[in-house]
Image (cartoon, rainbow, N blue to C red; front, side):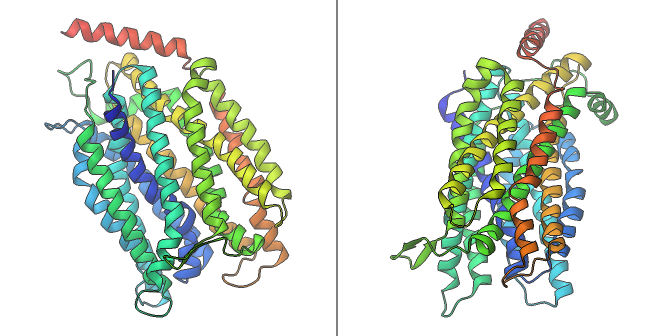
Length: 462
């Protein structure tokens, strides 16, 4: 049995990752267009180029991690050694040097590329850790739920405090300096992320060992095994589609409230001289609702199965997203209610995805006689990056296509486009995700049989 402290410690890792990831997903495009001064189409192209390259780095990190051998295990050392670079490069991504437009774009390419690389270097081993903490499928689902609960908790905290932090630091030194505000605000988040990763390293342990400890598989063998792993391909496609759904909705949110709802400052914090906007409250509500979904994932999946739970949640999210298009700026209550419902559905599916990847690692080991946990889990990071890549690039391109212009009143066409980016367009991602997962072949019964067979093999080795 995994102790509560270790479950919480494992959750700390994704809490750290998600604090940065949500800020990137929901604010980085806005930062680049409205604060940094880049064109949205150029930013969309940058997201595509940097993330596609980095997505294919993830399997390389997975292979390296699989071959790591230290007194702390295969995956935990990366949490210790990459934590500080993760925080530093994250802050540099939100620095605004006084360069020409061309050099500013080059700086954005450099820092964002480095950020995504260091994210891979720490997040792929972290994700892989789930596969070696316990061989029990139900405990893995529980660990996945802890992971996602803390991920959404981290996102909730980051999204709730980032705008007040930016506003607070913008006023230091006299006047209003949003560039300074973003750099210092993100620095506060970075310190929290570093501490959480170190806490994850300290509180977790690796227990599952490969069946064939005496044999070292080659990279070619591992890649061929992965290439012929049908459940892996299905889960990769489902994960990418689900993240396209999330990234388009998240990336368009700040534009939706700034240019369509035309929000007023909603909550003043007099002691700090800052305000919390409707945007912050909307995003924070989404993370709180995600946590509700995470709490529902394990009990519902244990009752009707992971596959049916996933398909049901995504089907409901599709219908709710489509309905979102017809809300008017005055229907704030309905906008917030539907945000809560859609986010609850999204919160249900991600613990199931991570748990399924662990099941696939067992399936691969039984089928091939070799365990490549890091390589298989790198696909979870790869699908995350590819989903956010396509969603982020599409967000930038769509804003440009619909005629968006930063910091001015928008045309009717641009407003319609922004509304579609929170409704019909992300719904395409949910539909694709349902189609993919409908072909997933590993039922609860099959996974249980796989676990029992692997346990017998491990007993024979002792």
